[in-house]
Length: 378
Image 1 (cartoon, one colour):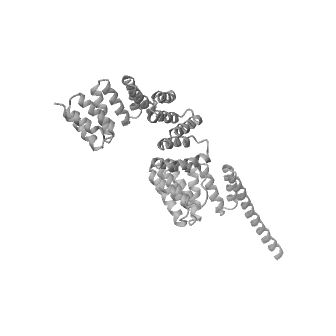
Image 2 (image 1 turned 90 degrees about the vertical axis):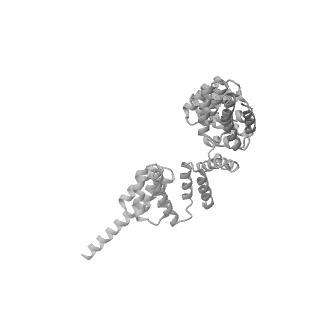
Image 3 (image 1 turned 120 degrees about the vertical axis):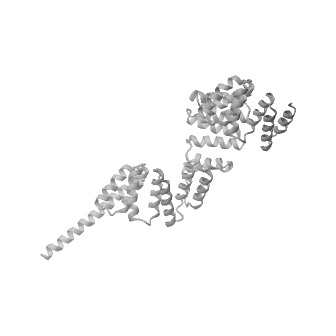
């Protein structure tokens, strides 16, 4: 009888060991599939592993990670919460949960999870990257850049994420550190040479660095990659218009945009601006009207069309649009100067002097000219 009991115990023990080994082997297979980028298949293996050994938390965590990778955020949230219950002091669990909260719009919960991650491991550098991304998405570029720099400072591995370097370059452009932006964007370009957005941003960067041929080069690269994206056409047009003062060539590039998107605001504004420089004021009006229709708060378009109306002796419309431009952008010189010219022509001395005062406050060289001409009015 004792022999039978002993054999039974040994048999059960062997079954348990076999069961545990099978769960572990399935987990290992899942990990290999995950390494190969086969997250759906990996989840299947992790599920099989957990069905044999529900206490294998490693499998549950890896399952949650794969769900995040597949953007199955609702499922990942449940999975990772279960992991957190078992592993409350594991930093990476809180980081993954923070990422899922971020992606599902629960920003406050995301921040709490990231903070919990840093409390456990203050050197968990990816938290700072995500803080930077969150600020970037809110267009708070100074904060984003500060967090990105913190990430670079703390991380112990080479950063091979092209999107990170692109975003860092973008924030540096927005904070007017163009030399640093160029370095960041070149790193992004090295990691992903076919990312059109990087070329567009490099076009902008080089324009700001007064490297106009290089700006055109990068904008053209973006056009080659995405010929149906009008941004590169507009970039080239702006360089020819503002830097080289080559109005006919600028107009050719704006027309390329308008062939793709007839209502695009910048191309319509650009065409109107160019036509005004050619003294084709009546022709400019239709383009500038479209620019305003496409973006009702486009102050520069109100300024330019106000000038067109002024030059075509449509004084009421000129005043209406220039007032709107001043209201939208009180520190803009051009709209005040054009309004001053209008009031001088209308012999409205006081309003002309008001514009001279405004120009004086802005430090404009036009202030003296307008004041002298206004004082000559009766």
